[in-house]
Length: 367
Image 1 (cartoon, rainbow, N blue to C red):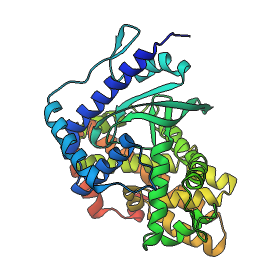
Image 2 (cartoon, rainbow, N blue to C red):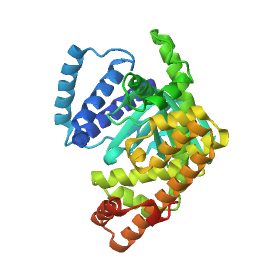
Image 3 (cartoon, rainbow, N blue to C red):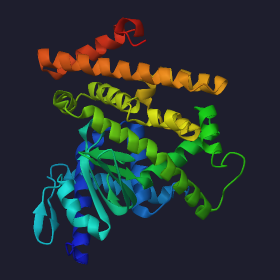
Image 4 (cartoon, one colour):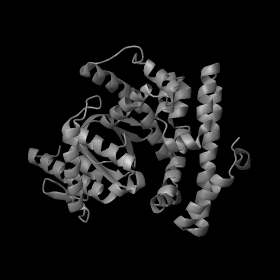
């Protein structure tokens, strides 16, 4: 086992947080005003130990935001620092090598690219490792440091990171939508599986215990999605190059939306697992957590959801999955063909814009 001194952990923490701040300084402009405010509130909660169900003190967060924005101004032209362990420096994106050193000590490091190719970093404690379909699934609890981008699940190569703290936050915020009208039926069904609809929970420990349980069970959806992405992307170097090179926000959103749809509807993905196990709880949470872009691209699953609860017929979901997979695969194949012919991000953007003007299921043979 590698010997990591206590002072090294503190140094790794400081360097990781420094890189988080640089990433935020360089990329905060990619967020909408609303997204930026939500990201800052989330980051404030993390850095000040305020749980999702606890109230943020407005008098304290406003000066904190001003200080953070001033820090970003100082750092916006800085470069990322290497991670130093036992006197050896490692490039900040070599997470796999860094984790060989950290994992035996119960720590885990993450580095990659999030939405709009924003660099993202974190340092956390490792709860558990699982192995499935050739992938290592790392379950992460306490996050020592993070940046504005906090996706509950990430994948690098064959390593999947399930970040439980951001997932718990997402689940609690989703639960609070019950006070509004958005997706009310699916929300009620999802959280009723855990007895949260007809009773008030006002004890922080009980809330924490309940949402930890939900997060661990719902995390299987995220893990299977990442595994399916790994399977579907394998051997498709051109597709991955397109995703890297097409940085325009509009283009990137839809490319990644179809990438997500392909994974969700893959034979290795979460929807196939849900059908195979007839797991209504996970199906409810899949619908509840469905991202806006996939929701737009995959209306078949929303229709199938309503039909399923009217008929209890799993075959309507199977048909929706088949149509969704064919749709995503046809799109990806045509994007690759367009790239091979033109090799420019502009050609990909033009294709997508035309696609949404003219496409119908019958024209593409999705049904």
